[in-house]
Image 1 (tube, rainbow, N blue to C red):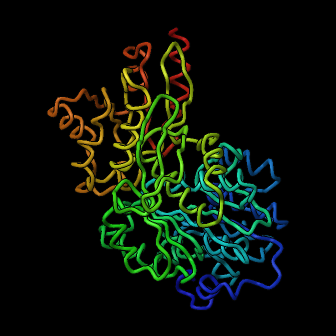
Image 2 (cartoon, rainbow, N blue to C red):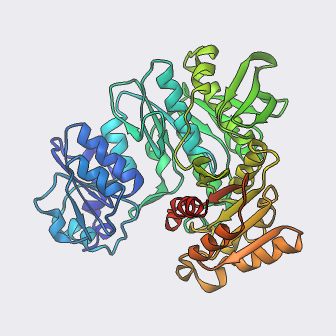
Length: 488
């Protein structure tokens, strides 16, 4: 019997009133994902007995879970549900045909999705501060959590990236505030709605709305419907902080029944960014509220997009009563987020940077920021199209202008292209051809080893190498730094 076919078990998953009154042992299916691993740590710190299972159990998540004493089974199967847990959290990597999911339904064990577990165990009695949008969620949520901490408000949080100030991506405490990165990706095989609908936002940020996640959304209209649902569940005494520079965001938030704080660079924005200056090591800008100067701010994160992310947080913190000088002081000390314009090392004057960018808009903004942050230096970009969307040809044309700020664009063959239907596949070779026709310097490579060999032979002192991927990219960063050190 499949879980989705059982009305009784489906009701247990979709109605949190059916979570058992007494829960001691919680089992997580798909525990080694970034979010699920964080949830395991949160539940463990909250005093629950936690076990888990996953298809691929490897560092660093396996080491993290082992350090907490959480047993993890490699592979899925009925035996992982013995001894019988009180509740199972089903990650969205689990399919309806998963053997452990089938055993779960047969045993009639109550189960919930990842965001439902967050809501049930950690959001009760707290103001949920949810950061959403196609771009900038992780950085903006990390900045919000860090600045709340700097203001003495010590928030709980669960974020999709490692926050450098905390050394982890979650925090559990009794704070009245809980910061969440609100993902628009689907919740679970039994709930295809976006995760952020489960987080009961009191205040939400929408940074941007573009088409993405082509594996679950048919088009931009479908993405807009999800964000419209988010806007509709905000309470009347809540607040929506929305980027007015994005026309799609403006369209969606027009239906809000709560206070809307619009921000951006446009003159009509209530919270306006002015006097933006990007220098090596910092970005400075002025913030105007309703035409009056609120303050001058400095951020160590380069680029316009990061200044706008900071502006959204400034507007939200003002709603919570945090004074601008306190925000400015915290922003100056922000240590960033792992894999967001993170400098992995410098060897012989060559800087290697790791970034998560993969959507063409994110690639363009990231490279523009790096161009401004490293003026006069050659910017070499290495791009791995790895997401379900970037491996599809839906953005084939948009990528052609996304690399304009780079001096050299190196494009890898997608590593799992066989998973995409042949007529829908992205072509790295075609992108390189199109870039070359536009007068750009571009190279195609079929694998990571060939890229490393090319870089070791061609990069020179003062080059900046920006490596863009949402995955591990065959540990290219460390391997490149080691090769450069050996060469030097």
